[in-house]
Every structure is written in structure tokens, then in C-alpha cells.
Length: 243
Length: 243
View (spheres, rainbow over the protein chains, first blue to last red):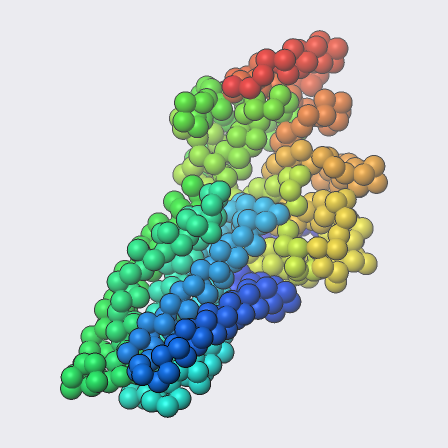
């Protein structure tokens, strides 16, 4: 049998291979996107049922951003677990670990894949949320500011979520453990992105003439948290995935 | 670079121990295996065979002692070593939602192979799966999965191949194909096989190792083995139970 020519390892090539493989598999099965999208839709429906009882006597805008992020967090937990379970099934994670690949490359490949799937779900969910809850009041800030807050929050959720899902995938109660670890660790990020999103939705009605300042401060905090957490994940992933 | 690339030894294991809590899975294991050898590792369930294979293939770390594979230290030179090892398990280590060809293309990217298409086609032909290359792996039988798993393990032309119960669950045809593939590449490779099948293990091996309770009960070259005595000793160790 002929031997293949020898090669130089390229982290970029390995990263794109993992990302492309995850996207091809998801487009083929649509398991994550379907379950995440359907779950998010059901959560929004329950919100709508609950808030419709107020008969217009309550301005949903005050809590809208919090509700939106709650739906995103629950939805992302569903997807994050599935993304690592796919690797664990049939021992595929072992096959990756047996290959000459730096462990952080696996982390970034999985995390970027999770981010893309989360953003696709958000593209479907956020307009639906706007239609159900914010059609009358609208947004105070421009749409791009809300989109930026969603992007910064989603980067943190996908990054830290991928690391926590890796930690929990070998445990018996992986769904439960991921949820229990996720919310406390992500609390500063969630607090910051909810504040930034609320600033865009309600503006001065909540932040008294300083909504834009509040928005950028909160977004800066969220971006800082993302950076620290991604660096921590980069440094710790080899230990976590090998444990 | 390993310290001793010129060495004729494929495996140098010195005082290797691995503990899980209070349990000693491996206890001061020492042996050498030359390049080009076929080492069969026997022992009862829980004897430490899989732990040994995991450490030698860089999937696990020893608690104490050292192991070198092809001159590479399994802990310090693990990334470099992984370029030279192939792993065939009873678990196929393949993505069920990718086709046979996509699975091999993915691992070719992970190993950064240059011009892998010809190599992939050649291996699919060798394992008699060329006609099924565009079929999803989820539709494959156990034997087909194992054949594709062999193609995956040989893709990057490894120097040493680890086999973890490779014949487990195979039909006679798949066993013949595996035998034929091993025979084809036998000359150029070192093999380490964990097996419960005494007859098959002895038939293939140049060196045999019996482990029990994490310790070496016997390590011998095939030429020095009396099969009847070996069988009796093996049966005795099976009765010794786990560590």
C-alpha cells in the first residue's frame, strides 16, 4: 500500500476541519437547530401567555431584555450539551484526542460552531420576540446596538458553554451539571448583557438620560468578561478535555 | 524530537504505575518491545490492559514511571507522538452522520495530509468499501464500521498501531479482511494488541504479555512460548480477578 506524503501540522486547517464537520453534520441532521429553535419558540409562547394576563396594564419593555436572555440561555444549554455528546458518541472525541491536534484548537472549533448555531437561532427568535412583545413600544436605541449586545453575549455563552459542556460530558448527570455550573459562572456576563439590552429597549425610561453610557459600560464589562473567560478556557482546555 | 530516535525499541516501559483513587490499575510495569514487533497483551477484565493501551497511545497519563513509544515520551512528547500512532478499537471512532469518504476526509484534514484523495480512495478499496464511500456511516453494519475504522487508523501511515479488541463483534468476512490488512502492513509497522482471544493473539504476536491485577505475570518472545503452558497460565490469571 502506498504511503501518504508527510506533512506540517496546521492549526488553522484543523480548526476549519472541525468547524466544517460540525456544520455539515448539523445541516444534515438539523438536530441542534430544530431542538433549539422549537424550544425557544415554546419559551416565547409561555412568556406571551403569562404576560397577556396583564391586559396591557404592564409595560413589558422593563423586563423584555431579561426575558429574551433567559430564553437564549435555556436554548443554548440544550445545544451545548448536544454538541459534545455528538463527539462522545462512538468514541469520536477519543479519535480527536489521538490525533496531533492542540487541544485549544478543538475548543475553538467547537465553540465557533456553537456560536454559529446560537446566532442562527437568535436570528429566528429575536424578530419573533420583537413581534410578540415590543411591537407597540419599539426600541429606543438602533437595532445594531441590540445586535451587538446579542453578539457579545453569545460569544461568552458559546465559549464558556463549550468549556463547561466538555467538563460535564463525562459525568452521569451532564444536563444537570452543565446547567448548575453555567448560570453562576456566567452571571456577570448575563447581568451585563441584560443591562445593555435593556438600555437599547427602554433607554432613558430606565437609565435617566444616560442610557447610551450605560449601554457601552455594560457592553465593555461583557466584552472584558468574554476575553477573560476565553483566555481561561484556552489555557485550561487541555487539562479539562484530558480529565 | 525524541532523545533516542535511533533506538530499535518501539516501546520502553519503566516502572509504570497508574492509580485510580485507592485502586492500582497498573503497578510497576516494565518491559521493552523492539520496532516491527507485534505485542499481544492478555489478561482478565480489570487487569490493566486498556489502561496500559491508553497510556501508550497518549489517551491517559501514568501516575508514576515512564513510557516511551518510538522514542517519544508519552507525556512530554505526546503531540509529536500522535503523528505516528494509529488506533483501532472495538468502538469505531467514526462520525455516524458523515459518509465514509467524509469521515476519512475529516481525519485527513486533522492530520494535515497533502493530497489525501488518492490515499482515501486506496484505503477504501483496500477495506472493500469503495462502493459505499458516499453512504452515511450510520447505515453501516458492525463489520463495515470496523473496516472503515481500520482505514481511518491507517490514513496517516502510522508507524505503530494500537488494537483494542479489534476482532470483537466482527463477522468471519470482516475478520478475514482485518487479518489481510494486518498482513499487508505487518512488515512496516509495530503492533500492540489487547485481546481476550488467546488463539488469535498468539497467532499474530512476536511478543506476548500477560497482565493480572496491574502487574506483569509473563512477558516473553513468541519463540520461547510453550502454548500449552501459556494457556494454562492465562487461565490461572483469569481466575485471579481484578486489581
